[in-house]
Length: 114
Length: 112
Image (cartoon, rainbow over all chains, first blue to last red; front, side):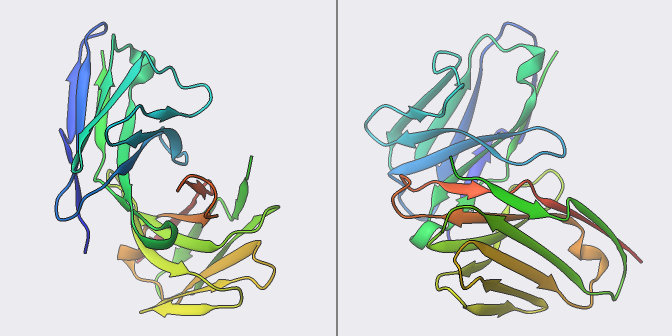
């Protein structure tokens, strides 16, 4: 089946630094990928839709200058959390769409900002 | 926007018991999906439903797409400890830019 990977699995950084998270589709091409964040014991919150070769589409309330998304190839999307602060600490998950609304999720990246 | 009401929020059951959870919506969907998320992992697709009234099984899991297209349920029979996790329903409508709407999840705890 379709596999989506994320790197890194977890990252700890100091407040004010930027962190890049990679999402790769390993055995298929993805013109679209989705980025979610998830707080403990909460549901998935869609942050943005990453579009290969064009600008990402951000959900209402998500700062595009804070969460930079780049989808430079058909197998790679990156999310950069700029000037991270402790409130940005969360579990970030990407996914790639499959057929008829299904999604293949990555394993997630745990970000902790000190 | 579209919202899904998923219930129950959490369940504590004994190993061997059956489990039932459901999702309802004020909007119709073309597809209902059920995912399971293990701690510290991304969700994994369990069952996808594409037609109103469809009943689909995957091992001990059974899910149904409601006739009104506004609800779905997931049953787990004879639960085992590895069923522990968070179960999410998701609804998909094909004019929503490929995005699914997710329920808030049902956290399942199974006592051996």
